[in-house]
Image (cartoon, rainbow, N blue to C red):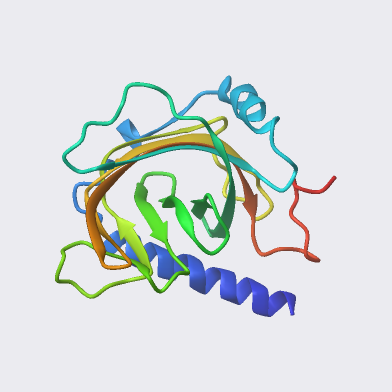
Length: 211
């Protein structure tokens, strides 16, 4: 069973890498995109302290029509989940404000490259997405970002049981939301404080979510 989980994790990570890389032109590289700030560890812990042990991310999300500027005011944080898969010296990090629906990000991190996309996911057949109004409708969309910044509390070591703490900031490119016949052109601004758990799950438990 453990071998099957490891194989599945590796396949999932490479699939995520392929998907993110497909639209990665213009994505910033490590030199000006991911940085290290050791003082961030306390900030992450502070953000997560108000949530139950079932949450390991604090997500500040703003969704606006594409024609409307984002507000300057910080959004109230909401709980989320963040999990990591590893393959050699590469980590795939997923974060979402739900389990099988919501908003978040998908990210691939290695020692010299960071690729990140905004993610929208729906389990409602009446809520679907696309990049252009006439494109095929999708329940899941990985949206290129307009700007982004990734800060880790410590330099990732890419070890399979590593917990990665950090802060992810992004603004997405526009996308279309189709909801019960209504169509909206939207964009997302996201700030996420993460304490990302390693996968696969061991005995149905997560490392830092255990009481």
